[in-house]
Length: 117
Ligand code: HEC
Image (cartoon, rainbow, N blue to C red; front, side, top):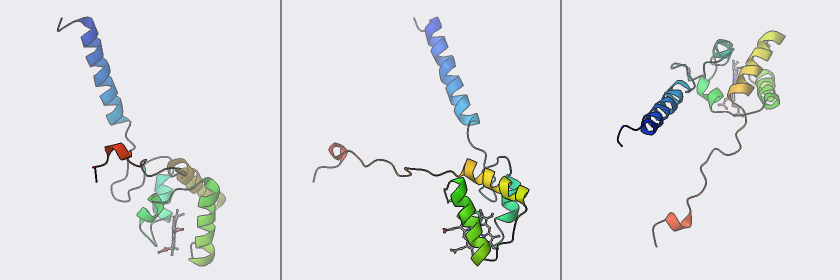
């Protein structure tokens, strides 16, 4: 039964899953590499003047640690002060889009899958 309703439904589901995957991808600003989300232009404006935005996007931290990083730059690296609203926009953006990640490496390969020595 090559055209059974079940096969058609299965094909439709497969198509939907693929489409969702493509649309679900996080949009990223090509120039800065920043994830495009609420507040990203503020971060682009304030966080790329002294170093690459890549230094920002390669960091992962919770809100408090992001604040610590900012305070550290303010007290030792001449980073300017932000007004409260700007600072909370920046912290919201960073903690939402670059949160801590427990495990960024894949698990080790199972020894049984390694070449025999
Ligand atoms: C006034 C200059 C300046 C601005 C603006 C600036 N930074 Fe930095 N930042 C620095 C310097 C200097 C370093 C140290 C760079 C190095 O180690 O080579 C640094 C380092 C960092 C690091 C790495 C910290 C670490 O522990 O290695 C992160 C993350 C970071 N900045 C994020 C940001 C974010 C987020 C913003 C915007 C709120 C920002 N920076 C704006 C000067 C600045």
